[in-house]
Image (tube, rainbow, N blue to C red; front, side, top):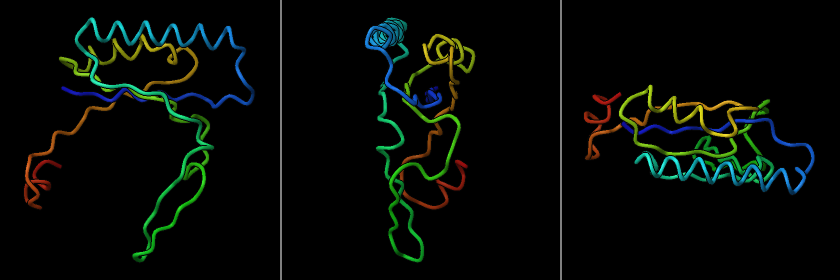
Length: 127
């Protein structure tokens, strides 16, 4: 089953010292390598801060864009890993190894496999 491991943490208020940033990058690279070696890795990316985000809404047929995140939150989504795990326990084991779990939280979300095709009945049956 595929799982999305969503990495949440408080956004930094000041720049991290370069040696700390490089050490953290090394930890993430090691984690990524571990997921590859375990056959779990499908994708993973770090995200720019929420200040670089644009929120899109459609209301009454009109597209509305807003700079930044839609809602104020204490923790922001900073990155993700998409993995293929045999079960939730294996996904949790992987999530616990993510360096960001020590100061933030990792949300483990199973990917919903929708049936192929575009019929409303197929989508409704999956949900």
